[in-house]
Amino acid sequence: MVIGLACFSSLLAVDSPAVENARARLANLQGLLAAGAASARQVEQAEIAVAHAKEDQIIDQTVYGEIAIDELTETQAEEIKAAAQRRLARERAKLADAAKLVSAGVAPRSSLLPFEDLVDRARHVVSAAEDRARTVNDLIAQIRAEEAASVPPPGATMDAPIQGPMPVVTRFIGGMKFALATDFKQIVLAFEKQFNRKLPISARGQTALHRSLGFDHRDRVDIGVNPDDPEGRWLISYLEKAQIPFFAFRASIRGQATAPHIHIGPPSLRLRNLD
Image (cartoon, rainbow, N blue to C red; front, top):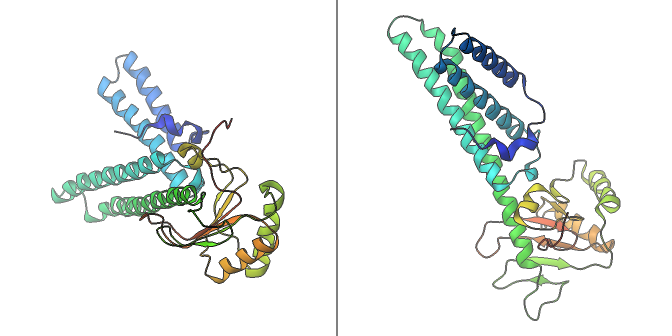
């Protein structure tokens, strides 16, 4: 079984060389089948090879960072993890077949090395895919936290730390309407000048993940810093001086594990009419 590639169609703009080669072999076998020179079983195996090549292309594009993590939906992240596990199972099966030849004395022990390398590589891919799936889940938890924190409890003010049943959340309503296209660049440049490293952006603007969950994240940015670390304290101070609204999250929300982060802009409210 291969992943439902329909939900990844937008990510497969161009076939990889492996997919092209698999397609070419399939087309050749289909021609041979029509001429009676190939079996239906060979064509079936070639079709499976094309599907596996497509699956591998998706794994490589997502696991190795060609596609931003926040452009994956929760379903896609889980399917990629499952696909990576299937790739590992295929490589292990190939290694087992090769080991049988060694046991039978047909092939030398050294012939197993390439198969062992592929199994080891597949293990690393599974680990990376699992990491990315966990990151997607962390982002989802952040989105849920922002939704829960968008309305202050009775008696709380928008510009005060909120404690009690809710996690520690600092809300600052500010006096400026934050515009991602014009205002965020100044924040990025100021942070890089201050800390000599890139601003760790978790989600910028409307993402596939936010859309899939039904949230409006336009003109909003999530920054992966702890509000109590030097970078977080500096960023909060910068945003307060600039009167830019933000939410600073230090803990989990209602028992859900939420990584500390700072949300710049108004809360991510439920989508209504977003084209």
